[in-house]
Structures are given as C-alpha cells and as structure tokens.
Length: 421
Image (cartoon, rainbow, N blue to C red; front, side, top):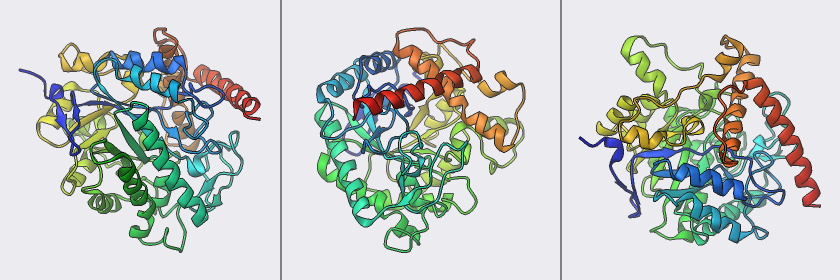
C-alpha cells in the first residue's frame, strides 16, 4: 500500500504539492558579498530537489539589506541580480517538486556585526551571547516601509520563477516580535491587545496576496507559542489562526525564539510524559499544539519539529492531524531521506544530537542552552558541504563547526562591507 506521505495535496489557491513532505527553511549563508544568489545555492537546492521532498522552502530571504539575520542571507530589492535568482528557482524545482521562497525581516534579531542599530517593535534587546544590540522602536513610517518591502519581495519571487512564498512569522523574527507581548510593548495601533499585535502580520499577508494574485501560493510560518513567560501563547496562536482563515494556502507550525529554544528541540515548558506517548511527543513536540490549532484552521497544516519516525509521520497524515510533515536537520545529513521514507527504504530520519556527542551531557543552564543553540552551526557546516558538492562529514565536532562558522561569519561581514561601500 502506498505511503500516506506519497499523496498529493491541493492547496486552496489550486496549486498541487506532489507529496506530504516539506523541507523547512534553514539559513544557508551562501549569498555573495552583494547579497545575490550563487552557484553554491543552485548546487545545494538542486541536490535537495533530487531527494524527493515535495516542497522545498528556502532559507529566509531578507526584505531590507540594512537588516540581515546574518551575513550571507539573500536580499531582494532594486539591486538584486534577478537572473541569478531565476537560476536558483529553476535549480530548486529541477526534481519536479515545488520551491517556495521564505520572506523575512530579523527585527531585533539582527546581529550587531551586521548592524548595531536594529529596528524592532519596541526597544527590547535579545540576550544571547552578546550577539545583539539594543534595538530602536519602529516608527509608523518604518512599519509601512516594511509592508511594502515584503510585498515587493513576494512579487519578485513570483516573477523569477519560484512556485510560492512563505512569510516568516515565527522564531522571534520581526512579525513574531510584533505578536509577542515580550517584544512588543507599544501602546499605539500596532501594540497592546492581540488584534493590534497581529495587525502587521495581516497587513503583510493581505498586501502580498493582492500583489501576487489568488492562484500563487502564499504560506506562513507561525509559532504555536514562544515558550517565554508572558509571551505569545497557544491561545494567542489559535486566535491568530482564526484571523488567517481564507487568507493563506499553507500554515507551518513551529515554536520558540532565540531566547527560548523550542525551535532547536528544547522547551522548558513541555509537559513530562512517559511510555509510548512520551516517544510520540518527543518525536513531534509541536503535534499536541497542532491538534488545538487544527480545530480552528481551515487551511492545510504543516508541522515542523522533531519528526524522525516514519510510522509516526504516516500516522499523523493518515489521521488528518496534519497535512504536511516538515523536516529540516535530517535533510542536512541525508538529502535523499524524503524519497527513502516515502518508498519505505528507511524507517527513521537521521537524528543527530550534536550537543550530546560533543559534551557528553545535557543541561538546562543558560550556558548549555546557548551551546545547544550553537548546534545549528554544525548543521550549517553540512549545508555548506552539500553546496560544494561534497558528502556530509559526521566526524566534525560541534565546537569545531562553531569555530569554522564564526570565522566564516566574520569574513562574510567584512567582504560584504567592502563590496557595498
């Protein structure tokens, strides 16, 4: 019998996804010093495209070159090399899959090496290894400018051959910051009650939809919760999803911010569990949240975070708990894992606990959480190897990968500053 993961999915806009597996967005750091696409990005996405995943979502593409998630991000504006972007779009769907562009603004999560004067809803700083500076509260003019930039980037994605866009409203980036009472302490029409905090997100989605038309897929990545005291909650998420009904084609649920690392597989708020249900919750740690969201969501639902067991993925889709299973880190280790799962050639996706392998222990201390966040550098190292046409390197230690990445980050920042003088 065919796997439920092999089923096609027709989105509200009429576009069809070839199967139920999604590559969630991961930062690549492979743009050139002018923030344009490169042959390395084309190699990377052609490799992932050949691996059988039905929908690939790019790493977050920035709407404003003044504010990046980190050096090496793609940026789209009037200076963009559109021919290079078109080549990337073609490479990313060369295997017959759909390829969407994720659109983002970092807000206060813009590293101080990139810009020591970030913008955010309110002047609330991110506290993580001293990487981020004190932000300045956005003016109404700044907010309207951001809406226009999100819209233009989405239109450019359509014009250069991408199959859809995903607006990034999760993981503590700008739209997520506006949703969160921790980061958004405004008292004007953009802050306060949830309907005000959600205003920017809805304005962006509506503006993008008007620009790209009704038949071009528009998706959203949204936190199920921020997992921070006083932050965006599951109840808030459910209320926002009700506002989103009729507006988007695919909702991807995740969770956490840089300061609360559910996005890396950690959440101090997760309830303790035992037995089989413990395995289930550990493997798909946003699935319980997704059930509550599913009760009100009228759009297809994807969940990313923790899925490794093929039987659990198939059960979640067959039982209509979710429509699409999101994978991220397993695709850094085995870019063919989607095809293997669909064809029952693998029972599990690769599950590498880099922090444990490196340090031999886990801890809930702030230092250990910061180190755990740094495990993303190990996976980014593997992404860079795939982009160079090389096999993954499992013997690379986390701390060594962090060192390689930090040196590379500094070099990218310096090269970018020289190029853009």
